[in-house]
Figure 1 (tube, rainbow, N blue to C red):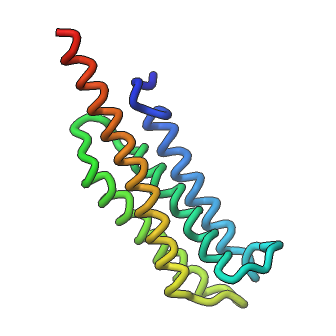
Figure 2: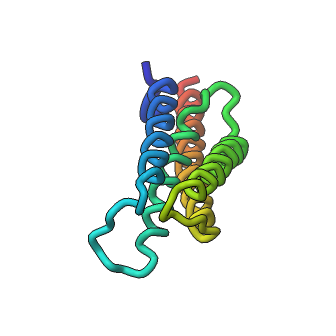
Length: 138
C-alpha cells in the first residue's frame, strides 16, 4: 500500500528502475543505435538525458521512506546511474559501428542528477507536508 507521499510502492519503483536499465541496454545494443527520425543537432544527447532522467527519478523512488534523507537519495541515485552509464559506454565500445562518447556519458550524468534531484526534492516536500499535517492535529 502506498503512503500519501509516494507515487508507487518501493517494489514497483525497483522493478521499473530495472526495466529502465534493460531498455537502455537494449537501445545501446543496437548495431547502429536507435533511429531518430529528426535531424536536430544534439538530439542524441537529449535522448541520453531523458533516459537517465527517468532512471535517476526511479532510483530515488526505489529507496525506502524509513530514515529518508534527500541528499543521500540523490547521491545514491547518481552514483548508481554513473556506474551504469560508464558500463553502458564500455558495452558500446565492444560493438561494431558504435563509439564511446564522453559527451554521451555527461548527458547521462546530467539527466540522472536532474531526475534524482527533482524526485528527491518532491519526496522531501511531501514528507515535510505529511509531518506538518500530523503536528496540526495535536
